[in-house]
Length: 332
Ligand SMILES: [Ca+2]
Ligand SMILES: [Ca+2]
Ligand SMILES: [Ca+2]
Ligand SMILES: [Ca+2]
Ligand SMILES: [Zn+2]
Image (cartoon, rainbow, N blue to C red; front, side, top):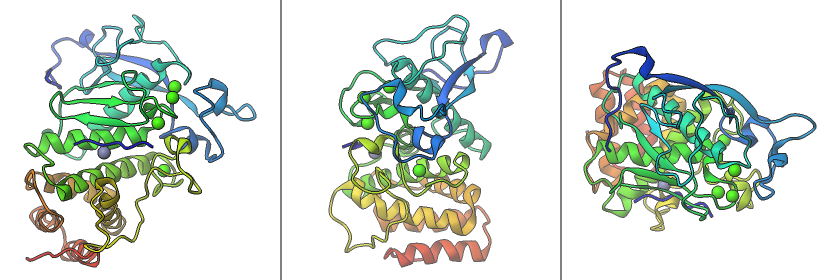
């Protein structure tokens, strides 16, 4: 099972002193999101990391992309992401190595590309203070089918159990969600509800980013490529964003399960007010959370943030109604 649990510092975005400090590279990634979404094919299976597993009748899920903001060292080190926690790192002085999925260099490339994508999007929304740093990660240090963000080191570990976790952008982004909350809220996640919100936000974050690229394919199903190794649902999903769990009677005390209440509410808010406004208010309200926030406190903070951002009365009302329909108590 991919558990995806969570419980620097080189400064990003230093001013460019000369253009030669920054480089771009050309690499191949699964695009969009993961092999299943790219191929729109839920029958793909890991086949023990075989390159041939994702090639069907001459079609494949790879796309060449430009890697931006590399520091020019030849390693996957850049302004917003670095694979430097990995044991064996790929190196290319010309920044042009291309890997298939049977090489961990491919996982490095996936994580670099999609982490950089996430931070770039955050800044496009207008935030310069949300995990605006070089996110360090590893792709070959854990053989578990599990990935995690470690707040003590501010690093992400992507496990290689089953489908390598960094072969799926949903997993890459879910873990980045933990990094975001840890960056926005001091000592985040000291209670079960706070950690459930953390898991729910990570799932939402993966969903909203994936939906930018997927063309509408299976957006409520998370990590459908990684999930082929352990899910028995059709299609295989790590978790979903469209569940009906209701507070408090659906609480079971497992943070990923309970997080589905939060992610589903956020996903409905996204549908109601649009992705840009939803993503903005969701990131903004984190600044008002505490390390031990409850579902109700987070719901109140979310509505308050929407008001403070100047969202219209009907948008605020839509957010409020969605949260109340989930069983949360908002006292304005
Ligand atoms: Ca692989
Ligand atoms: Ca996996
Ligand atoms: Ca594997
Ligand atoms: Ca999906
Ligand atoms: Zn998690």
